[in-house]
Every structure is written in structure tokens, then in C-alpha cells.
Amino acid sequence: MPSQLQELVNCWMAWGGVDAALGPDATALAAGFDDDAVRPGASPGALAGWENRHGFRLPAGLRAWLLLSDGLHRRAPLIHPISAIGPMILFAPMDELHIQPESWFELGNPNVETVCIDLAYRWPGGGCPIFASGDEAAGTKPRIIARSFEEWFLKLLAEGGREYWLDPDFAAFGNPWEAHRRFTPPPELPGPLRPFTAAVGPLVWAGVDEREIAARTGLTHDDVEAIIRHLQHVPPNLASP
Image 1 (cartoon, rainbow, N blue to C red):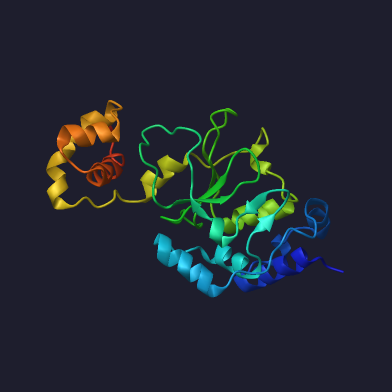
Image 2 (tube, rainbow, N blue to C red):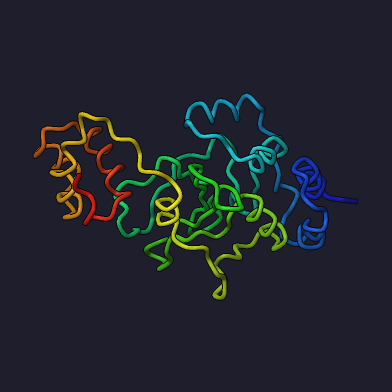
């Protein structure tokens, strides 16, 4: 008799038109997950409320799974319930990133590294990319581990829920910040703030704290953050207008 997880996965694949041949083996699911892996589904209203609150639309595959099961658990949350999906916390530095994009959300927290999703763009030929946050203490770097939620989810299920992206031979798809900067335009900068980029840019590249930049320029903290979000999309030698 199929487990509840198997039944929900079958339903999820049917909803999304996923080829049944790509589905996980029942043995892998049974070995990797117990009866507490799934939860009652989230309501459409809860998902709509999340999207309205954060300003980003959930990808279809993730939305469909959350409607079937509000999360996925294996000793720890591989996928958070919708109420716990929120802005990620950066645990490892990334070159030339000063303020993380507002589109980065923590999707799950299975172990040392969190699993995150970038809702700002679609990977060419894929969907919203999934990336591991990295962990400076553990010596791991942020890296894209799947080109869509569906790709990650199917592989995760096939592997019985284990963190396959920690395998020594796993080939990642690049740095999440570099990809974000490549595939999304710089955030719009209000006209009145544009003259300040020439003064703020060198301070940012020199590592001056945002509060100190605000004090030196007379700008508000929000204004400084808006300028930094814009400038960090541009290489430092091209940052001046």
C-alpha cells in the first residue's frame, strides 16, 4: 500500500504534468521518510497572504506541494511550512554582495546549511533556482544546487531526503549572487538619489558601515540601502555615473 507521502508525490506530479518515469522510487521514499514527513496542506489564502506580504509569487511546483503538504520533514524541515518561509540569513560571505536581494528566501533548514530560493528570476530553461546558503564555520560556500524547485524536489525525493548536494562530487550551478546579478536588472534608483552614487560608491567598496555612510552623506539609512542595492549590481570601476 502506498505511503501518504507517495500518494501526495503522485498527486503533485499529476498536477504539474511531470512524467511518471521521473518519479522517485517507492523504496527510496520508504527508507528516507517516516509517517511524520508530511503535514495537512496549506490553504490557498495562506499562500496568497504570503505572496501579498512579501511581494513575490511562489513558483507553481512549490505552491502545488504546499497545497498538498505544508512542508516536508525529515528529522528537520527540508521544506518549511509557509508560515516559516522567510528572508534568508547569510551565513557565508559572497564577493561584491553588500545587501542580499529581497527575493532570497529560506526554503528549508535540513542541517548546517539552509536551503534557499531566489524568486526574482527564472533560470534559462528552468525555474526559480534553489541554492545552499553556505556556512563559514563549516567551510562551505553558497552555491546553486538546482535550476528549479521541481528539479531539486524530484532529486531530493529520489535520494530519500538526504542532502545530496553535500556529496564531494556534486557539481553546482554557480554562485547565487553572480547568477542573480546576471539575470536580473539593477533595482530602480529614484532620481533624487542618483547624484549621491558618486559619493556613496567609493565608501561601499571601501567597506564603510551603512550607518557611517548615512552620517557622512546626510542620507537616511533607507536611502543608503537603496543606493547600495543599485550599485552592487555594477562592477566598482563602472559604479560612478
